[in-house]
Length: 463
Image (cartoon, rainbow, N blue to C red):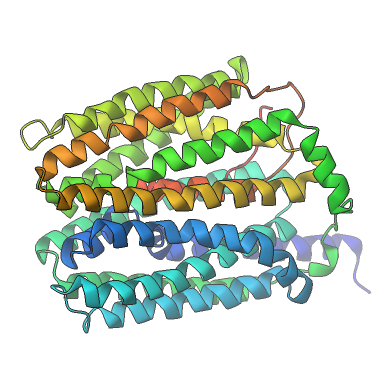
């Protein structure tokens, strides 16, 4: 017979092995995870730059991840009843690999000078990608919570976040060098996508090797959905927060995805130039997170969020005066943005932990994700259609973009009026509601905050 000490030692050995595999899984998945959001600067260079997709088509493609988030909120509960979380994760991560492998192969056959031909194919491939990514992301979040002990969340995921952020910076530098050296050729993008797909295949194999005892999973006793719905309706702070999230998502997504297109087409910037900006954001965010955490502990999350949002959006009015002669301002804007947005995202996560009612956690996450995803998905479609009409009207394209960029910070500042109505209590936060951050990760890619794509938000251990 095995002694209890031997059993504990064996379990700890398996846990260390699983954590090590999970870390390598994250590192090898980093390139493709970054590329998954169509609003990032690499995919913008591919679709709007190399293949000349019109704003309306590009805006529709950018909206697809949010439609995926919206749909999975209704379908995921049925999936959970049939398959284990690990099984769902492996299935959809594998489909993700097949989808992006298809995209890499299709680039050789799609005509760069015929967007009316290539556009529908890109729409189809990115639609499939958005659907499988929504399922894989949520199921992965659920899976790791099943076997990673709660007491290790802060230490382990803090370590994992840091090394993945470093890996992403290396990836961005590599992307900038590769595309710059090959003048943004189709082959350069193909190599980039294929390399990312191969690394993601390694990631899936590492996930498969993670051994977890699903029999030890703690099952939550969930109240009936009608009871949960009544709890939500009796929680005005949560309702105001959902309204704010929808308004902010629309504001950020209406013309925000076209910042990169503007830099390529109007300012003459290259992928290498923009990669430097993205690194500034990542470094600024990494350095400032501890300070924002201390401020949130002292003054609360909502004041930190309001301060950061106002400062960030006032700066965004500078987009309305940018031109090739003063484009150097972007270095200061993105460096400042990396610092200020770190405080906003940290406050956003922590305040959600407080506002989501414990008795209706599951429904609250689904409602929040579904409503904000639906409203946010409409924004880039409307923005792309508006830009297309304005650009076709004969007005100078630089003026069109500068005028359009007035709307995003204006709407975002008005959304703060909804945030003011949110009451932040001193109640202890829930331990983990990572699914509620799905839309912030999706928004991150198009706002230059790519490090959020891989970020695992955890409770501040000081709280």
